[in-house]
Image (cartoon, rainbow, N blue to C red; front, side):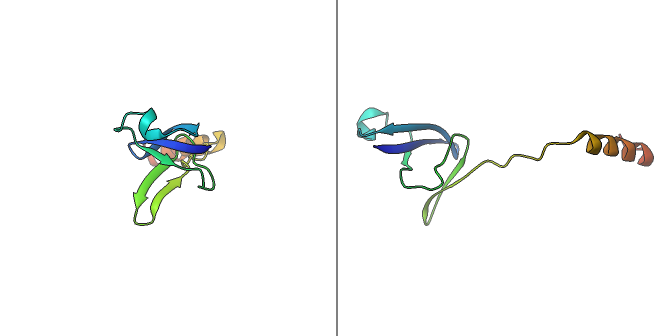
Length: 84
């Protein structure tokens, strides 16, 4: 069985595992990439870019959560400088 990722706008939007022929199973306008040998295995919402070395996948970056202390400090600093 092989694992495929469907790519839309440089993002993995779907994963599909099959032994079938993807060209016969789906419309040719859909972009499916064989990721069976890619480690770590790309997941939905990962970015996907094709370059000179082939497909490159990256996990999405998640911003660090804003702590309550940081929020209060920003409000206090804004009050000191007169900025909203």
